[in-house]
Image 1 (tube, rainbow over the protein chains, first blue to last red):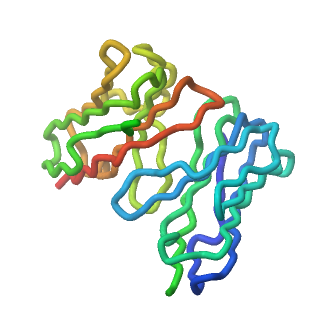
Image 2 (tube, rainbow over the protein chains, first blue to last red; image 1 turned 90 degrees about the vertical axis):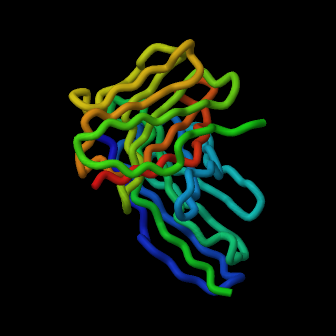
Length: 113
Length: 114
């Protein structure tokens, strides 16, 4: 069974700071990995999809890296803004003989103005 | 492009009652997913459809949950009878095909069972 851990569980930073969110997974035989954000009471918004053959993916101020062999991914957010406040979830697809997305519990980010 | 639509957004029922949720995926998306998200947890897959066939329902509590996808487009998820532990957000997602493709999520239905 694929298991996903996200560290830290919660993070509070002042506006403008660069930050890194960490995700680790137990089975490296994945097809891809997706990062999502979830605002309170809302559904999930897809941020980045990294295919298993890729090392990183960038979108605006977001950069996600993937080290499949070590079972790790990081989401880097540059110049954080209050609007970035949300819960960030990582989800590898596949591993442990499944084709599913397996989600971590997320990192709750608060950016203080 | 319209996103994934879900209704209702909120539902409050008493235990042992039945409830149904509806999902309309993004046009052209062959794969549809239903997830259950309990407060403080990440979403857990309940069932995956490819067109109107079931690909994976291994985590669906089949004694009380059922789902169907009519004509490979809209889908409904039903709970009958509901238990207190079914209180959660039910999320629908869709993708072009299954593996390798980005999943797009709807706003979810928040179910409270009293």
